[in-house]
Length: 345
Ligand SMILES: Cc1ncc(COP(=O)(O)O)c(C=O)c1O
Figure 1: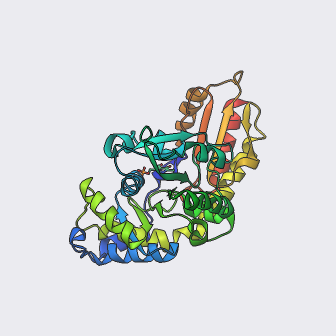
Figure 2: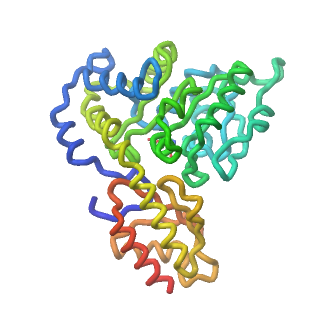
């Protein structure tokens, strides 16, 4: 990459291995089920998660809405976190496209939803109330600082869902980061879920695409909804070829990004005027805040850093979220720390 871009892991460029694989990809018409590279990606994704089938989709947002619509009919309720991507950042699509009522519960600082809050959102069988069908959980939880949720927690939510006859969808945009942080594999981490969406295009560096995994029956339904939403792609093997490398090779190295994020947070903690909690950095996200009496506010610091080819955007007046990824190396972090220190000192 030509910049030190810390805005998100979505900014990652594909690796040269990916570009080569894309050039050589075998393709076919995926709407007819004839693209061998897409079929292989879907098969391997399902295998990795211990589920029956997979479905390649254009984006994480598409993976989530296809899954939510496959689980819920019109007028039904889906329980999700107030700051979950499915609620806060997907243009209200459950309501707009699916006629689905989100029931929003607070996301805790550790990224979880309290079981009692979920339980309180489950409607009784009364014609006044929307029927509750689904619970959505995000792992890692982005708005809480990339917090990974443990297999034990997901199992507790899964048990509640089974007892109440509800389905469980995991927005696992960064599920491989969660698995690395929790020291487990994605199949164990997601076993209680009926569906999982994971992204190939974030820390895994593919240029585009996500995969939904679940049962054969669920993926059959999801395939129809993907088509309904205009997500049937044709020679998508070009993208799936990069996705296969993302899935097989890039998941192995995510601990490097976590170490880089932690080093960044620890370095920031030594800079006067910066508030950060390095102990909360468990994956690849660092949330930091400038003191109100700091020499620069967020916008001014961001502008100064841009002159050094460093892209870090404020959210609000003093807050930043920085995300590490494949293209951010330890030497870049040293350089960014040196510059922030220089501008704030
Ligand atoms: C947790 C989470 N879920 C879903 C998405 C949506 O992914 P996409 O941008 O591919 O639609 C994002 C995007 O950043 C995300 O952070």
